[in-house]
Amino acid sequence: MKDVSGNLWHKEGERQKQMLAAVEGAHLCIPFQCEVCWFRNLEGRDPRGERDDVYLACIRRANLDSMLGKSPLTIRAHRRETIAVLENSRLIGKTPAYHPRGPFPLGDPVGMSLAVDMLVKSLVAKGRIENHVQFATLRKLRATYTKNWESSPSGIKEGASFAKGAGRIRPTSCPAQSEWFYDFLRGLEYRMGCQSEPNHGLLIGAIVHLLESLSVDAREAEESGMELEANELWKAGAYFCTLTVASLRGHEGFYMDLAGLRDHLPRGKDGHVPAGLNQNSVLTEEMCRDLPHVTVCLLGKFKGEIGVDHHLIIVASETISGLRPRWWLEKLVDVCESEGRYSGPAFASADGQLASSLDYNALFRKYLARIQDETSLIPRDLDVDSRFSIFRSLRKSAVTRLERAGFGDDFVDKMNRWRTQERAKGRSARRRMNAHYAEAILLSPTTWRGSYFL
Image (cartoon, rainbow, N blue to C red; front, side, top):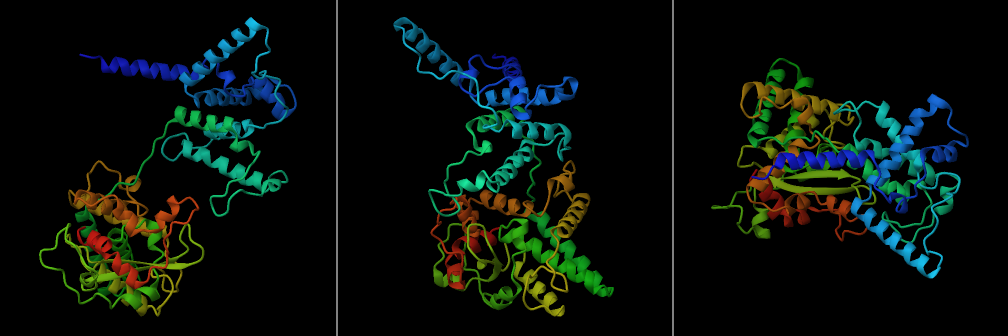
């Protein structure tokens, strides 16, 4: 039997060795200078004893990380070729074509100073998941540095680009964009690894239970004369239900437009579900118009679009699992009208101020903790506060349910079409964002069916 554990230990030992020692010949593939030379280039002086030890150690670590950014096999292959060329050149008395390895110009053309800043932050900043910060947090410094460069006297000279739009291409001498810095980032990520605490999805039954508990509390608050508290609970319920059935991320729910919702609310109220409907049933446009549905109306400036625009999503009035989006959205409109609001953000306070995602998230976790205590719908070993949030948990719940029901990967893309713009990387996605009701109906075979089978 193969000793798998021994092989793993061997690989881990090789990895540790690679992180602490350079691969022979790495100086032929990266612009290598020792830490003392780099220090002189960056500071214009010699190191001064112990006070500069951490600085020098960070430069050495950055050098090693940049070597980690290239494959050892690639480095060794280039070293072999270089040796062969040098030997052949010696035989015929030729000056080798390769450039000498120094001296390097003064200054910092490759971003070593920024690399040191990132490594220092990894030493002093406290992480949210572990004691240290994650690579993704350190990487943000590069974006900040790049913006600083672009707005500097050196950067403004490089404003011309080869292409138009968000995906412009332009030459730059910004150190953060150098080849060495890309190698450093790859090596840093390889060495640090990545540990995350992604939001978990929920069983749809848990969401149904949450909404039922929330509605009970809202009615009790109304009966006790606490109308303000009841209204906030009704709004939160509508928000949680909408995120789930429309497969939205948390911040996208706040795009809900009250005027658009009120305008489209009567449509689809008296529809009926075709007999024998299943996941594979073909829905014609005429059938879609007769389906019991409600229109989620979003208004905002979506990524990849110019200006503010509407986006409509047709969802089922009620899902087979017991979610009731029409009931909740009608309740939302009633609550807003009782506050004297007929336009503006649907999820807002009585004075029209947009609701707080922090407040909704706290309420969401409060009810999940209750469900965890009272039922078996949420495992007891899951930390509700760290594993669930409105940002992704409800969307993940919907996507997971639909994947298990046999729906394809394109479902979420068709439900939330602005993500096509994100993937287009600044190019036209050949799709208008202004989705009128007629267009939304044409997407009902995806959006209505997807929400109905939740």
